[in-house]
Length: 183
Image (tube, rainbow, N blue to C red; front, side, top):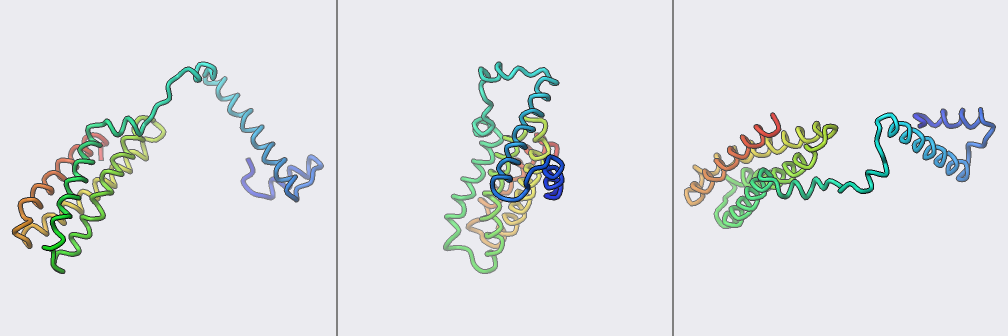
């Protein structure tokens, strides 16, 4: 309602009201809420929305939907498989592979979190921008993971097959996300 505090002071001056103190601030907040309610009531009527009918509608739970989504399940499976892989690397990794392992350690969790957010945001048109950006972050984390797995594979023969498998899984997941969100 007030972009700058001076607008509030000018309004109160024009109405002959005090602008300083807690009571004045609380009064102004009450005015803001009243004006907001009036604005929403006008918009609801303008769009022909029956608020009483909304009480009967089942609320959409985007998080429950995301958990059941096959893309999220694939991202979550990737995360758990990488977590299992990381447990096997503790005694094998030398300083030559430490940076790559740290990339994998960080980015494997980002993937499932951002896919979850992308799916949860995708159901509403006003959130599409957030969904696409979250998907793009997941894709970037997958790219970094792929590069790290591909760098680790030739350094550690004991990990080579698993690195290649997880790199391939990450590539497939990238394609799935790209096809779904257009990134």
